[in-house]
Amino acid sequence: MKISAWTEPRPGPSSYRLAWVATGDEDHPVATASLRVFTVAGAEHRTEAEIAVHPAERRRGAGTALLAEATAAARALGRRTLVAGPVDAGSPGEAFLTARGLRPVLALTYARLALAEADVTAALAEPHPGYRLVTWEGTVPDGLAATFAESRRAMDDMPMDQADVGAETWDVDRVRAIAAAVTTRGDTLCTVAAVDAAEGTIAGFTELVVAGAGTSDAQHYGTGVLPGHRGRGLARWMKAAAIRHTRERHPDVPGLLTDTADSNVAMRRINDALGYAPTHRSVLFQLDL
Image (cartoon, rainbow, N blue to C red; front, side, top):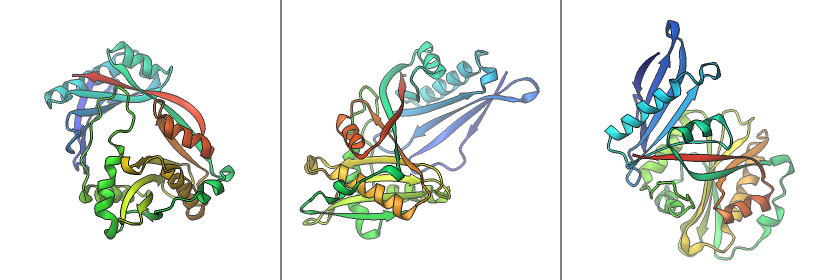
């Protein structure tokens, strides 16, 4: 078996990737691995590994060798954490990571909302005095860019159990770069924000991405409300508005997908109330370097 290395030629706005491919007889690829190396302030201590082995080539050492390459690279870069997954609970991936010394640090529940069956009438009708909703696709409007970047800290205390995540730094350039990256790959980033009417600042937001032509399930990216605005139903209101927006602007999208930490009880209750049905569970693993 031969392992070849590769480095991403164009780093992203907050990270870059290292990659390896394992080849067998006649140089046929049998497995791949990538290591996401974070460069944004607040996340410079961690890396994320992803390993894929062809089913016919499993249990022959390719995955172990690639994980060793990724681990060595993370250590050489001075990182303190390598995370892998999430992998489906009870899957061969979970057994593989456990056997190689990684520990489970976060359990996630995945859920799907069938848009044809969703009823958000009641959630949208609830009063939220002092707040208004703003919706956009793609890059945040200039007039909201600074307050939107500031609102990203609403995710800093999101339940992450034992995962060594940290609070990332956000600025206008970064939020614009991420939106541009989504657009460049052919997808649509949809954002709904709750604005404090008196201050004109964003109190919370929810994001989802519609893939390609908009004929497959869309994926939620994140929902957060700043601490001073919590307990007022804003998260449910924003998610309901995002559901309505997707159904109206992207009528061929059949459903919305989300994943939530099992310990994030508040968000799971919101998803349940809006009609999201659990589909499966997964586990995030971590290796302390």
